[in-house]
Image 1 (cartoon, rainbow, N blue to C red):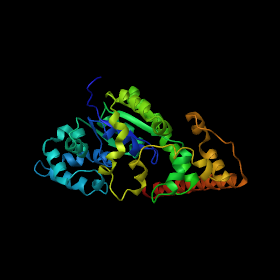
Image 2: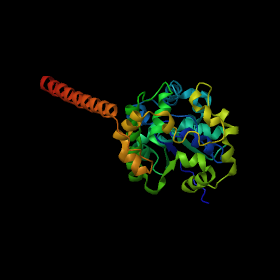
Image 3: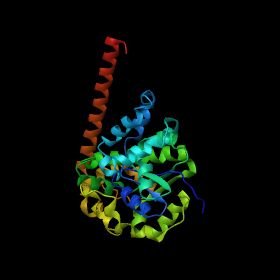
Length: 317
């Protein structure tokens, strides 16, 4: 097995099992993946500004900026570890500067290889490619109806079935488009349903894709899950136990017929393309909700276009 050091990125629509895969890979002796970063694209967009900071202050300013981010408490590192990691780098090593927290986490875990688990990076894979051209991309995919139901129980993300369908479809379609285009053979899709029902087989495939030897300890990830999840992340409570099939096709019992029909109106082609079962459900309420939503979107588009046109007429920009 090749001794690869390319970073491993776990991406995908939220509530699709990205945390589960992260914990499994963290149980590998060579791989360390901290909590979600989210700030990579923003830092990269500010490259020119950061390059303008003086040599004496840029490391400390960047340390404080990352430490002030809302995600820093979830990363699993101390600010001193981040500061020390940046001290070992120059700005010419820009990709490593962006990933300094990830590198510090892996070093603290005594792991040879770092990774990142930020679901939203599925929307900016070209940027990830620009920063880390040799990265391995693992795109977690789960039945969107179960994803939408899971979001409804959280304080974040889409809070209605139709909104959840559009959100899921957009993320999955973008990942399936940009991933293969940017990373080719370094892009791999991982199905949640297969990961929880056949974890060893799927993890062997994942290890093969990223160039690592499979380790049985990855199946015992739940024994150390508490080390990587903070108490406030109550939505990850299921990942502290061994995987089960309880989260598969919950929509059959928890979704009304109207919600099933509504989701399929929004995302049936993608569900079908991914091999998920369609019910063919149709209800008047689903069509009415769908119609109102699409009409509202069209109207908002017309209003926005009119505002832009008026602004250009007044200010010439």
